[in-house]
Length: 123
Length: 377
Length: 115
Image 1 (tube, each protein chain N blue to C red):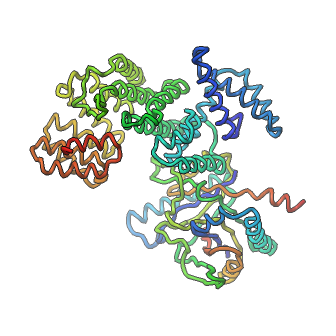
Image 2: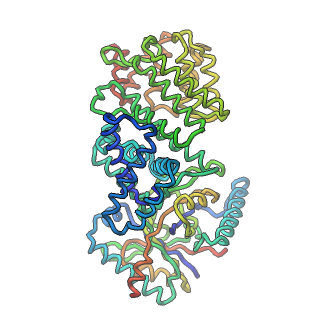
Image 3: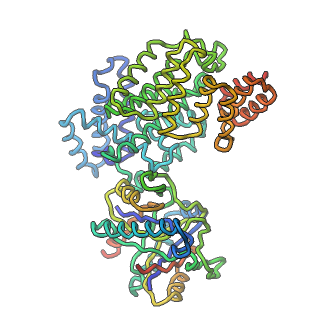
């Protein structure tokens, strides 16, 4: 079963932080690197990326047939997504066990299985 | 569940066999091992149901073969069902509803009535939870090792919530509502049988037994709620209290204390006291202190303050209660407790004000009636 | 240069989708499928997933040693991520062109960090 883990990110990069907050962020960064390495090696992680900060995001939307391009994310929220991982595990409990080892907030979402569509398209 | 792998069918089957059990036991007597019998019946029914669907032919084979394994497997299936219904990835209201539906055999209508929501709303809550179990692939398994304590805590929280909902609304024209408190007790007993030697399961069981032992005294002849200080203690069920104390002793012997055992111990101090005045309040305060160390919640601190008023006086207790204003400002019992302490200090006007605020926030009819009575209505 | 295109929508979009007839859903899925097919053929889409609806979401939060599991998304918002695609293109403009060609709903274009 495939899930996508969405990782909570910070609004600012670590270079904009100072003191204890910066140390904590750097330690978490280190831990997240180890996490990725561990689970990539065991084959549980099948994809994933760290995203650049929300100030680098752009939104394309369409209103009444007109396409507009705006700076920043579409989703207005205090929380932002800092990255994601695609994982292939047995069930939600295994996904939760992985998420518990991540140094921050994680959202776990099952993906829609399109493997049969492709098989159908091929035949 | 694992052998069935289909939540709807498994649930239907367990309910079907519960119905069969309830129909048969009055005539044939309760079998020696109702749990095992229930699952044997459930399996027979499952085979019938699955036979109708050829896609499940293979699973039927597995199911039939598993019947030679015996009782532990059956008990395990039931336990898996409980842990799946109480999975923390589901919203807690849905955990309660699913457990009542799938394990205790409630109808959707009964659950809706018990929680005072409309039947369609409750049906949707259950459907969504079932969909999530399937879509997110929440496994049917009993958590093991390091995972078990937290997951067991979630199950106990559901059972305790269920119990409180039933216990607090007893005697309030609840004739049409099925008694959740009895069902929660039954489920906790079942859990103890399926997962023996868990100190906190026994702790919750003891807590429920000790509360239920006092339930006859909680309402007077006119159906009005009577609080602990004014209760006629001769109406307490001494046999039930003794049983609750025995259960608590068994839990204590395991030397793994926890919040439910501590709450049961507090209930035990009250149960053993001849009167409100002669209660061992120092012991109660000590137990609340221990409880605060394992679960620091403002509600526990509020309860501790009540006990403290008997040891160090109403003024000290009121100070502690006032400190909780920010956390509990929307909780009716915060204001009701303040009212009691203010009364004791002779501040009648302030007490009335606090009691009015409690009334505004209180939903439970029995508690509302009590507040109105104290306000002189 | 790698970008992640997030396909987002509001709760109303999700509700509308839930109310869609089989045919309407099939048509919308076909349009999204064509978009994926076209850009996968070009080698520009290198990955992507459609996520299941918001009622299937679980969040893990809290400090190490006290991680809690709760129902629902961590981003408390009216908007929802419905899926995403990972694209490998030469610059942001090319990623924006692809986002403009997406057949339904807004698209967030995020540069992936090099690590």
